[in-house]
Length: 496
Image 1 (cartoon, one colour):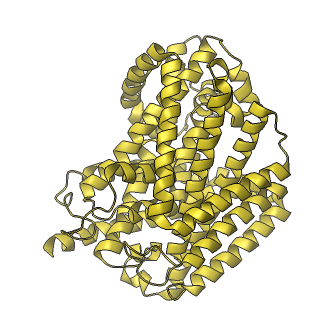
Image 2 (cartoon, rainbow, N blue to C red; image 1 turned 120 degrees about the vertical axis):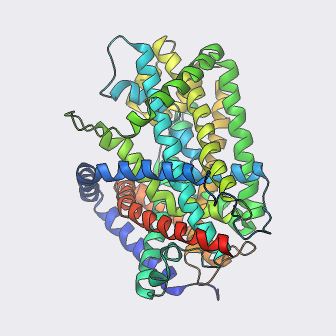
Image 3 (cartoon, one colour; image 1 turned 180 degrees about the vertical axis):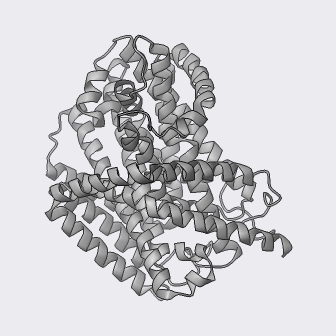
């Protein structure tokens, strides 16, 4: 525990307890307050979020072609610790694996039903637009944010020998101002812990809904607590085992199981339809990328953009401290070019395949009326994935596999979140061979489970999820300054 920064650690825990208590005891008021605040931010600052999200994507792509592309994270002699397969598996599992399971079926159907720009009696356009929007929300823009902030973390830690903290990315003036540095790092810790907590809670609801839909297990609070306890205990074991024996092994299992499920849907579903759709979706996505990514809904009387694209952009910013730092932690020895390609383009390609297979399999059922999937999603989108399987062979076994994947993905998010929170609350430089104090990691892992259970019981998850997204707006500004400091430091690295 000598490497623990007590101000960051203790104040973060205190604030988490206070925020959780306030939100839990006033869940309805909190939810209304945060939703109104999010709506105001979207209305007055939506233009800024859209500019920044697109700007980061352009900057990330440009880095691949600059003179800095061959700079190696850790110095010219640094050797990557993880193979490409393990590296991609870990960054993908921590980054959004569970999100694709949750929204891979539901989101395209929801867009098909609610997007204001859909055309009457034009199934081809509407279906392509639905998949394109899902790819926009989960693809390049989000991973550009992760890749740039991840580069900032990795370069600061491995090349400049600074602590794995957000304050380390903002220059000496901020790092030497202890109250300011501690405040910035506490905000990052809070965003990380509360973000992972809300996902843990929402994932628990999905697992509970899946058990109810497939096996008629009652959706009671007791059963949800049991789910949280199991996930927390597995995550605790993984945290104690460390990065190599815990998170890496779970990530490998995640990717194997998820690939198996995806191939099952592809082979036993409308295979030819999916193949044709993937090609058409790709062309449509590329053709409309600029238009879709910069649409502000300014000439419309609708507010669809606030609840979808702007929500996702700010959610990516809010999750950036957690995912980016974790990606940086596992990326020692990569060049800047390797890093951008591996973190930006490879996961985006996986997203494209996943959304293309699951989303089109779902849309096929809707437009051919081979199931009640459309009505099921409208009534309860948490069971969308399991409802998709109803028309497939061995549906129950496939649903069990999906539940197992959801659990493993959530365990990966839980132990990754605990690891990152521990690193952010460490005192000094945490190198490639030292994750952070074990007691700190255990504390954060247990706290994640407790907070998720309390919020589920008191009904404060929606309020907290919205509050986390709101944190993404100010954090987007921090990312701008971090990237500016990073770019300024690259020239000195070449000179050295």
